[in-house]
Length: 172
Image (cartoon, rainbow, N blue to C red; front, side, top):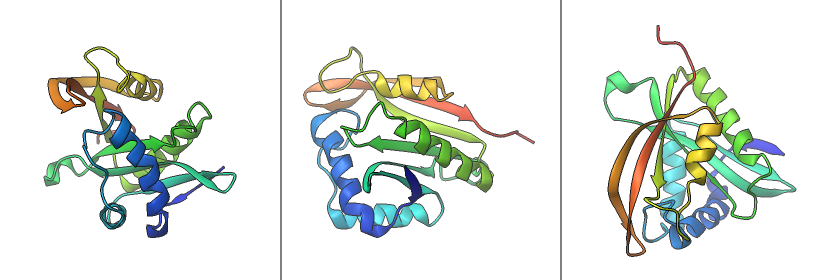
């Protein structure tokens, strides 16, 4: 298993991983996958300020995690939003834990304290969305701090969105 910083050249594989979630699940509230150029630009823009980590195993990228701005005001400078996606066939192998552990360490070194995850959450589980992401984050030490009701509409249904938080440093 190799963890490393994402490169623009990874965009095609990362987009392949992400596109599955856009097209087949309500995990992402996007309706259409971005173009390859747009996805490259997303990677490049993230790397200007935040870590973007990929995990390779057996020579293949199995997942990625990155951070981004939580809110665009100076007072939020020690907070960020975190995101993770795993190849749909790579779950249950410890990749998510490895990615988030590496991401959290990089963020800690940057002086980040509060991490936030914005998670699609089903009113009731269905074929497009389960509570797995919430359960994963809880397992990683995140706690639920808020819920928005029926704010995302996809596949002809309404979905909730929750915010989860993890504090990884001291507020001095």
